[in-house]
Structures are given as structure tokens and as C-alpha cells.
Amino acid sequence: MIQKNKNVKEIDNKKEEIRQKLIQFQEEDYKKFSSSLIPGSKPLLGVRIPILRKLAKEIAKKEEWISFLEEGKEDYFEEIMLKVLVLGYAKAEIEVILEQAKKLIPKISDWSVNDSFCSNFQVARKNRERVWKFLIPYMDSKQEFELRMVAVLLMDHYLTEDYIDLVLEVYNQIEPVGYYTQMGVAWGIATAYAKFPKQTMAFLKNNQLDDFTYNKAITKMLESYRVPLEEKEILRSMKRVGKRSKEEK
Image (cartoon, rainbow, N blue to C red; front, top):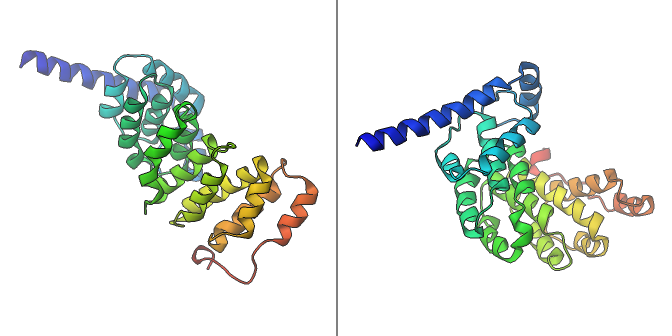
């Protein structure tokens, strides 16, 4: 019993130590600025991402990184962000990583943590087939950020010759649940066009996207420096008019 209490105390001390490190680097002005950009997030301390990345790399190198993910504090935005960054930097078997990802995904409640989770999830590039299978249940989700996670993660790691058609098929089937789902899909389609214009153009001419997502995808293509001017003229003429999605009404 004494040993058990000692272990609990050590864990609590490590949790508090990490929080104190975050508090040490908080900036009030940055907190105010970031809070306005990340609606729906947990309360912010105001710690810059490069600092979080440095701390995450340190934690990921330690044997107890899983304990941090499972037992570390989650009261602040930075504490959740730190966990998704640690998972991205951690070195372990793919099944261990996926098990931890499964526990973290339901805790994502804003676009910033979501997109950092996706971009940092580099194991997907070395294990595309396995991670694709892992994502299948989330493709039919009704949760806004689970669907955005699918959209952005596919954009970050699956826009390849082997997967482009499958990715576009998923984008076509994702339910437009909420603004951040729609914008994630639009972003993914626009990026797909920059990399695979032929396949994506065919998709744009025959899809089941809601009007808001479709038009946002076109807008992002028009804003992209990777799309030639002559193609932008064609894309501009393809925008849907006369209809508005529920989110636009």
C-alpha cells in the first residue's frame, strides 16, 4: 500500500511539473490573440507552439510517455495540444500508437488541435494501409471533429497515386456535419486538385457534395498559388449559384 501511494504521488508530481512548465511560458497577449482564433477550445494559457513542440519531444523520448497521455492533465488547450504532439513524436509499434490515438481523438474539440494531430501523425505515411483501416469507422461518424480529422489526415498523408481516387470517394461520402467538417473537406479537395488536377476535376464534375463545401473548395483553389491562372478561369465558372447550404442561410 505504501508503494502504491508513493507511485500515485510521483505521478501527481510529474503532472504538476509539466503544468508549471507551461505556466512558465504563458504570454497574456498571445493568449488573447489565440483565443479569438480558436473557438470551442479549452481555456488557453497562451504558450506558443514551438515551445509545446520542444516539450513534447522531450516527453516522447521518455519511457513513461504513455502514462503522460493517459494520466496527464487536460484542463487547458495546451495540455491537449501537448498530448497530440507527443503522440506524433513517440516511437512505438503501430498498434500502440493507434490505441493511444483512439483515446485521444474524442478529446479533440477545436480545429487547431485537430489539424496538429493530423499533420503530426507521421506514422500514417509508413503504415498507410493499416491507418486507413483504423480510419474507416470514423468515416461514418456523426461528430464534427472526427470527420474533420478524417478529411485533414487524408489530405496530409494520402494524396498519392495509389490513394487519390479513394480519398476523393471518402470526401464525397463524408456527411457535412458542421462548419469545420465542411471546411476540412473543402481544404482537402483543393489540395487534391493542386496535386492531381485531372482526377479532381473529374470529381468536381460528378459529386454529391453540398453546395457550401463544393463552393468553398472552388474558392480555395482560386486562392492557391499552385493552380495556373487559365485553370482558375475554368474553376471560377464552375461555382454553383442560386443555391445555398443551411450554413449560409
